[in-house]
Length: 511
Image 1 (cartoon, rainbow, N blue to C red):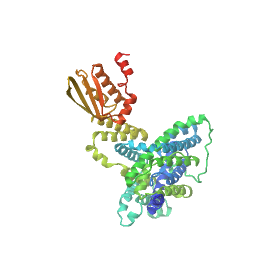
Image 2: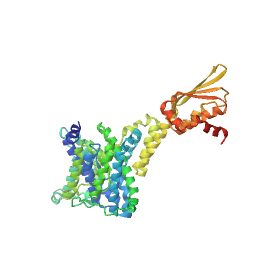
Image 3: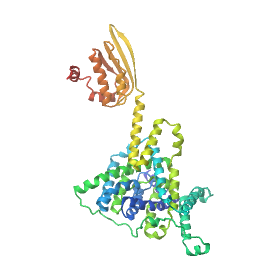
Image 4: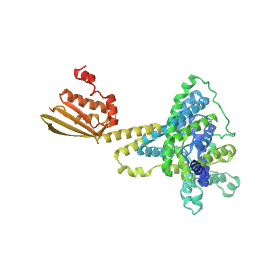
């Protein structure tokens, strides 16, 4: 069974994975360079990281078909550390980040994804789509008309090439776009062509303008930092933040790829895999990274489904930047912008906009809030936190409305008995409502509270039950609780005071 699954992950889609890996490798180069610049380090730090993380995660990750590398979200968290302490401390922080993520995997923190609602995931996806598009705007600002023409032509190839019979379904259109546009750019700079056609060379930014590409393979590096408590104090806050953001983005991306491919993934294995990949990156002179939703979508839409696509992306990336840098440096940014715009359009959930009128208001508020916070702060973790918090509050409010109490008055001999039937969930948000249902001023000999269809969840609920029982006793009525289920009885017995005479005496005696 395991052998069959492993074979399927690696060899179940060889052609699609190889072609998709080529596309991803080309798209990774400018992003890795850009993220290195954001973090304030040499471009090769981001490129080596992307190579190492992509290759390692292909073997140890929990989500086949997902691409991990250096990312902008992680780079933003490194800026201050690099500025104040330098590259060596960044490498040490990267190693610690990996260790923390491995621990998170063994603690099964990947299971926490169950608490992220569909509305939050949709908001996260839409926010990332907007951020991906916004990241392309600098390449489309204050440029010549040639850039717009090439970007438009690239988009035309991406969307029209798949319509061609046979070949359109065999070769990924983003790869065709990049190769065609690069060929056009190089052709306009070829002197004989310029003399023959009279066309001037297209003046536009290329990958080579983003930064100097490395000219050597990465080597093993142990961070040159003192192994002291002071070093740990410096790097731990950054490593903890990197670990949290990296896992959050990776697990969210895994969920999205699960949906795109109609398959499931091992989130806890993904946590461990991200940690191992980051340790490998730090030992090869790279920065910390995580899963990339943009590249993962490119991979899936280009036909990548298995682990082979991530391996090919990493290996081809290294080969391109080290051995074919003269060619790679001439890839026009306009071609890559076209690919990323395609990713942005494909990532955004257009259905979620149409559903705003049909979905519950609370779900729409959660989705829009997640988008707004992520786009406004560029902080993915903060946006998801706000979304999860709002979803939890809305859920708590909704559940509290399903709690109610029925009552009837009966006579048992010469005694009057008021019976209350409690139905629903009693917790912090419904505790006051629970108490309000009881009439403490009514003169009765006995009160029976039937809890067989109720559940008590927290100490607020237990406190509300205590309050009700003690108030009735203070008015002179006998109180009997019946039907308490085992789980509720456990928390009531542990934290309740209504059945503890010494505590009752304190309350009734005013002490």
